[in-house]
Image 1 (cartoon, rainbow, N blue to C red):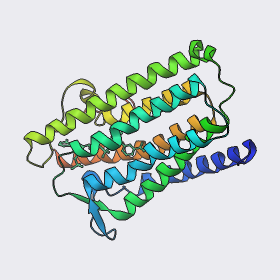
Image 2 (image 1 turned 120 degrees about the vertical axis):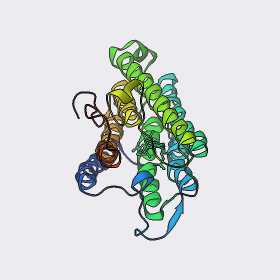
Image 3 (image 1 turned 180 degrees about the horizontal axis):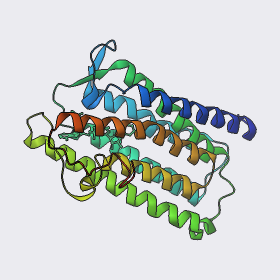
Length: 253
Ligand code: NDP
């Protein structure tokens, strides 16, 4: 059993690692998807890689949620179900819809993502299963919950819709890439990553605690550099790429 102080110390250390990771990812492009490389050691199939690397985020939080020392109330149940909703799609649906053919990703990338998802899943699940006893039902009327859930649902919808658009594009492009148009794609190159950032920012607001903040910061640390890399890639790959588009935050970044 980890006490609250030790648990918080683990999270502060984990947040420090997120900052370091952010600066590394600004320099080193993570080699999967369009940036995949074959000189990073053994490779694994892209779809298998996605399934394996995201699986801990679906399983680990629920294990700690159910094996914690408290019986979680309604509000923690809502939190874990929101988390589970996102990762049910990411693990059980998303990988099997990808049209990435025989594409592969480095095994080490999948391994690092397993670690990342394991620790994040542990933090969320352990908190909810052990330290979430202070939430009562009135939290559902709190402005932080209401604003957070609006952000979360909006972000989730944007993420799912943009992922769908990109997967559909692949249907017509015979394994190649096309310039996406429509909706937020008119303003930014990566609405799917923008949606995911908005979603987990909302999750941090609706939980209003250190585990939620930690997860939102890790999402930002991973996805901001990835969106910048995607945007640069689009501009290099397509001569006619719309110049007014930003990478991930409309009109800003
Ligand atoms: P991408 O936008 O790069 O790709 C999504 C899918 O669409 C891939 O199958 C890709 O193929 C295909 N695709 C992308 N752009 C085009 C295009 N212009 N034309 C045709 N096909 C295209 O997404 P990411 O791989 O960066 O991320 C996928 C999802 O995972 C996102 O929802 C993201 O938010 C989430 N994610 C979350 C992270 C986190 O830390 N929480 C970390 C990383 C991702 P291909 O693979 O061949 O490029």
